Image (cartoon, rainbow, N blue to C red; front, side, top):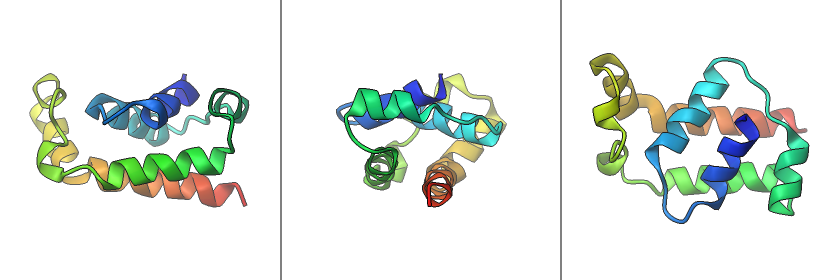
Length: 101
């Protein structure tokens, strides 16, 4: 499931806030992703996919980050998502890349 969420983030034209939220939730809960699914679906390395995901997220304007997601979250989670989701997810993706070494 986690690998498929990463691939959704990797493959989607533009972005969907829910993909970022879901990826961070998997990281936060200590899930691992299936590397084979990522390499088979992408035709490239896990490192390249994670790097592209980071690049996609870095390009997102903080003011539009919650589009399509904010109304679905509790006040507490909305505040976290507004302030930390982008940076926390990038940090988690970079940590996952470092574990590949």
